[in-house]
Length: 129
Image 1 (cartoon, one colour):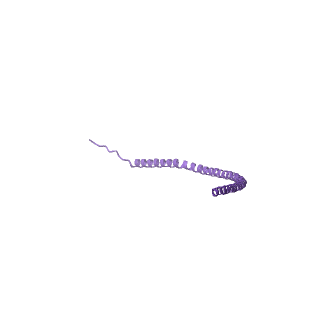
Image 2 (image 1 turned 90 degrees about the vertical axis):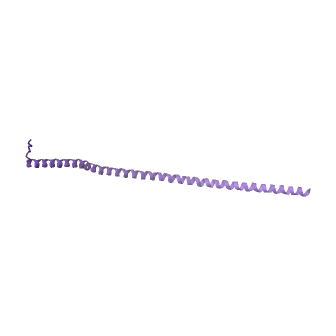
């Protein structure tokens, strides 16, 4: 049995290695560009979106600030109106209470007078017996 050995030709091996390296390099470049390209497009879009959001936020904040100032002014006006109403109501209630206390004092004096006269009458009756 005779084994035939193929003769290895060094220039073919070298050519094959160069082609493999070239293919790997080309594959690496394609993968890198496929990875970097979307990031480059996204970066510009991201900056634009960020600017738009900042503008929207600024507009929203300005609008909210204006609305809050209007509400604050309305609230201050309502507070002043309530204070005016409360003050007039308190004055009226104070006057009514003074009148009622004077009437109560008068009724108390009348009751004391009645009680005193009743006690005097009872004492006189007890002493008379």
